Amino acid sequence: MRFDSFEHMLRHFALTTPDAPALRYEKETLSFAALRSRVLTRSGELKNTGKSCLGLLCDGSLDNVVELFAANLAGLQVVLLDASLEAEVLKTLIHYTDVDLLWGDEELKDELEISLMSGVRDGAGRILFFTSGTTERSKAVVLTDHSLCQSAWNGSAKLPLSPQDTLLCLLPLGHVFGFVCGLLWGLSCGCCVALGRGQRHYIDDCDFYRPTAVSVVPMLLGFLMKMRCVNPELKLVLVGAGDCPPSLLSAAAASGLRVSFGYGLTETSSGVAISVSGDPYAMEVCPDDRISIAEDGEILIEAPTCIMQGYYKRPDATREVLRDGVFHSGDLGRFDENGLLHITGRKKDILVLPDGTKIFLPEYESALMQTLGHTELAVMLKDDRPVLVFSGEGDAKGIFEKLRDLMRSLPRGQQITEVLLTDEPLPRTATGKIKRWELQQKVRTIA
Amino acid sequence: MTRQDVLEQTKKIIYDCFPDMKDIDLQEDSVINTETAIDSMGFVLVICKLEALFDVRIPERQWKKLQTLGDVVDAIWKRIA
Image (cartoon, rainbow over all chains, first blue to last red; front, side, top):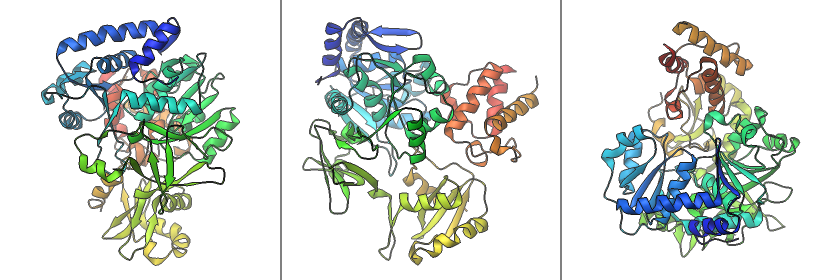
């Protein structure tokens, strides 16, 4: 069923299946009726505060979810913040998004209190997510409960859950994929959502909650498979927010799991295409969305119900990617003969050399990883020439030796000219993507 | 129990979880994510096992700050000493 708002969704299930379990966290279970009741009560309290913008220091708990729905219902702008970030970073984000009220860990709140702002005038319905910052500094993406609900409907139209299912929510709620596919997908289908108990319970949450479906990023799927902590009731895994190696997919399939991939961005309120048939890399476009491929291969998305309002206070950045209702994704793709979408790379992950030569990084780095048997590496530009940033133990001479044949097969302009060794891990987003903008800054300082 | 005991137990857990690392001589200043080839999920596993072994709880918010083996040992030692 399609819902216009969080309140519409909660009201519907509170009336039709009031006693059905909506949320589980540790040993506590809230029915839909109890969840809505708590949201209504808390919403009234929030209205009385006179505040207008709530910063949620997300911890993934049941209270966290109640607070989010309640603040939205009370007409506050809601900003989802990653509580694991450094306090100084959080202060910057709070300042940028006009937060005048905080929810979360008391100690952290005390530390951040000083950075509170004076709120906003027109924030009702808005939910702000931060982009993962893979290629540039994080921006706050303005979504709404309406767009998020439409996105959940879009996904469930292709991949429905039943009220008998239990969806395990392991991903952070501050990540749009975690929020929509870990929480709203389940609630909008009337099924129970089990809220993961944090990273330390990745290993036993499946055993504890006995879910039938789970949304994960590839790295987490790898962990679940490696540690053999998948429960027998689990039948569906939705993977998103990153490339999933075929070997991992085979391992999941061998365990009897059905694996689907979702493609989407924060700017589109999560998924716009999803795989539902045999080939998990071949995705059907969701009903509300229209996808076309530009001449240079870029995926262009029209998603009138799910598209962001814009980047918060960044009309210039919004205009760069959203023109005439068309969102320029920065990702590359193609349609196969059956009309199914395949993702082939990221446009912004192309290095353009002074001689016009282009390096498609995912493909290039994959070849380097295969040759070196090492995944902690990245190709960057230094003095306009490609260099290899190698994180971990190794020596430049030995690395060059291993790469000799591969380099010989490449045009001279694309050959690695220098190996930069670093002890530090490569900067990555929560979903494991390299933060290239950050690494580019560091390249200058690596000896 | 001494801090040295915590260090030895921590190294043992890492070697048990990652047998491929038997040849690596872990030092206090070994950087967990690179020199030890333990990825972020592997790190979660090590911390969980250490928490269970020493019956301590290191807040998840502090996990990112544990860069070296010595940092991990200090985080545990602080809670049991």
